[in-house]
Image (tube, rainbow, N blue to C red; front, side, top):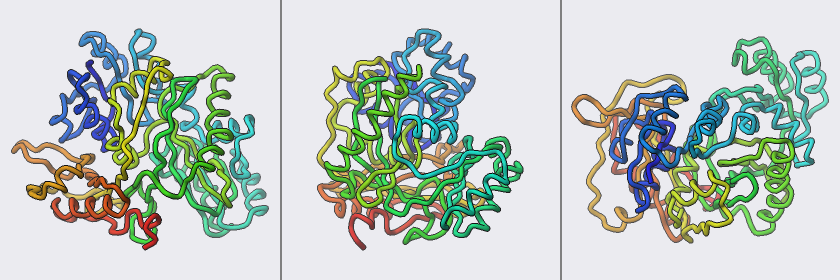
Length: 424
């Protein structure tokens, strides 16, 4: 099988790494990939959807996997399917679940899927009145894609109004904030649940928990994610059943009913309040860094999971996961997330400890290959050190042992990933 992976981050590296261990996979291409994906396959400089589709036809690509949200919302799946190509991901219509927070919230309301009370509007006056009716903190969201930065949790009503004003004026997020969602704050704990879907059937992956804040103890600014672990003990069979009955099944049935069957990864951002699940958001692709801890837990061939989902045949697949835990620690550049940092050479010490070598891996993200052949940290989130173990503590310890083997100028990371599960 020949596979094309669209994207350039740690998520796409992790998918490529899983595919590279699959005997059914003959060759992998990445578009555009990063400085380390060239060790797993071949990087392409193509970016236009029609050019990528033409390449896939010419090379006889059997499966294309789309990592990031922007191409999905932009309609890459529609372009490929029009050419008769097999591609993993939702159509542009179905990708509105992430592309428009207003579409998502209204979809939840139409199908009676539990979520926070909300208002969608393009009027500051209406937003202001609704904000006055809520207790602080208050959540304000830009409607469109904002690279994960379009959600503000305002600690006071005045700050919520300021956030709404900034979005609606275009100052904060441009056109993406021309309409906004204002919603009540749900006080509970957050989970990341992923379902791989084929339009009708689905496979639920081990539930993960990520760490968005920059600093230990969940302090500092929000980031794209500073670490994750899976599976989390904060979910049990009762909660899985509630998610299945109240969220996943109604979502797939609703999407099919509305003429946009959902294929690909459905990420469900869940807030658990008093044992009850409420939906914070949907994404239409794997989270990052959650993907980096989920892929090493996949026991079945990666190509089977993605190909059967893309071709509507998940019911034929027997997808299994290792009965283990994975913890991923993001190593970021010096100035992340405030501004870019100077490129820095990455040095990874040789791992002589057999146990660590067999139970850890690095997923590379913001890296480039220099003319000297060396790897350089050139992005905000540079790489993810992943440890595996029979317990969360064992996986966490191995992840941090691996962190100690990786060196580049200005490196930063949190030291408390998975603390919720370990009660530290």
